[in-house]
Image 1: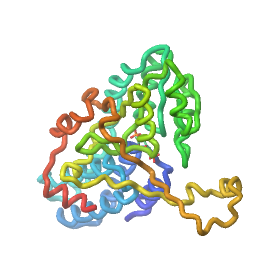
Image 2: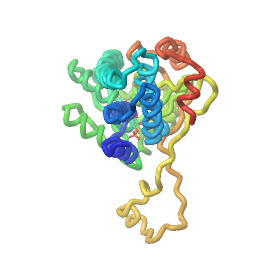
Image 3: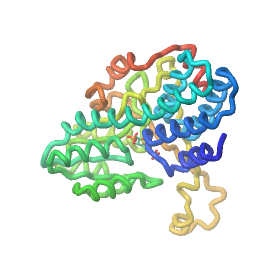
Image 4: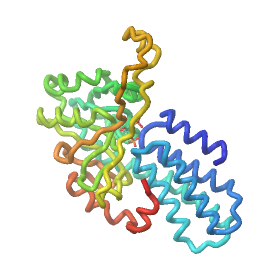
Length: 326
Ligand code: RUB
């Protein structure tokens, strides 16, 4: 891989680039760079190199079907094209990468249109983590002059919720930061808080949601208090392999994320060598706790998600298994 692609890989792995959508965009950009630098002499060689680059990039964040789908989308265009010349294939990849970035912007605009309808004036919204899609929904609601407050969980261990809090308050939206464990308290005491919005990293064929760790706790709590919880997401977060019963992997992250130097000091843990740490990045929220998915094709009930997005995925079972090979 060329150095720029290795750099992208590291930036994704270390969460310098975070959020499913940003990660997918970065990986498509990296794939394009790699293919432009290809020294392949034949179409077959070019496609082989492309598959190797995809395998490499996919490993940067294991729980990201948006990343895998985006790379598959570009690869499948190249594979299905009749182009024989390597230069023509390079051109095609470049155009498809550009097209993906453009379509992503258009898709987010549509999601914001639908999502914004859920935000009532004189109400509060609770959000978790940092999702570029939710940011767009809430900014659109603000642009429409709705008056509302947003509560952001900090989202331990890496505090992506603070990124949301800063971004929203910079945009002029009334924003309050809470610790993750205050969510249930909030849902039971804040009367005008009826809506919880979360992002999505993966959606399974049963309509279950994989998103930032803590989402399932929030969903249980919202369900218990009779509040609505929607996930704002492009349909490209659907993981087609779950149609064949392949479980969604949950990314496990390094213990250092919990035991930074500052925290070690706080805990008075000088040498926590024997302390084991479990640090899952995501969790699964069953469909029954989700009110709906806010997508570019409308607000879908979780149980109807797969049927609605089915047509958009050019599904070829053999090719899929070959491609994903988890
Ligand atoms: C981010 C996260 C976001 C989704 C959706 O986790 O869980 O809610 O990825 O983001 P991390 P988007 O910080 O570990 O990547 O709407 O931008 O796709």
